[in-house]
Length: 98
Length: 171
Image 1 (cartoon, rainbow over the protein chains, first blue to last red):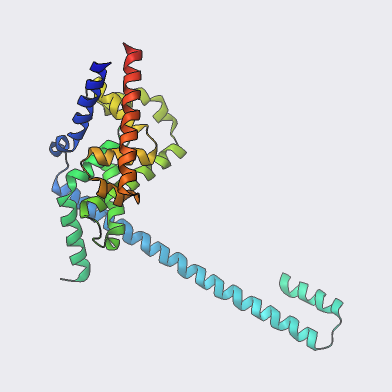
Image 2: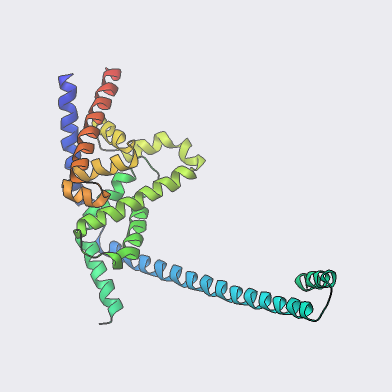
């Protein structure tokens, strides 16, 4: 058991040295700078797509809001013009389905 | 020099200063996986660039990089666990042999045991093994220093027990 205990400590110390062992395997500065360039490009493209999506959502929202407001106006007009509830419901259905 | 160029220059300098650390984290977390260390490094560099502006210098640069890189690698692992590819499972034995090449059997075993730890404990024990102080690990994990110390002691004990149990089984 003691040997195993010592062996564990030995491997533990070995792992503590891993950071120094890696020094010889690290990629070149050129490769790293190339990765940085690619990363900057990727983030820029993503930001551009997010702005396009946000703009599209905004336009869609404005259109939807405009249409709803227009429908509400027409239904209010029918109510105020003395139509029966039945007529208003039929007309409202027609407006919404248009 | 424009602000953008200045930022890119500062980022590149930071990467070059810490390239051994980034490489070490990527190779450590990709052990036993089919990912190429270079691909992991690219993902880590993307994350570092994305959060570069949020680095306020409250912790050391090394601690910040360690935290971002570790979180990126953990995210890759989670993604990999959610959508495992059949080919990967078929070649698992081969992959492990390749990944641990050059290490002795008992060292491999310790690395595998660390790899199998729950995420947070794995991160804490790795940071401890990589020479970070209790205070730095506490900053990375939002735990108190005493909690970090306790976790390290418990996890090391647990690892030792598992290591001895495995070796007893073999012998």
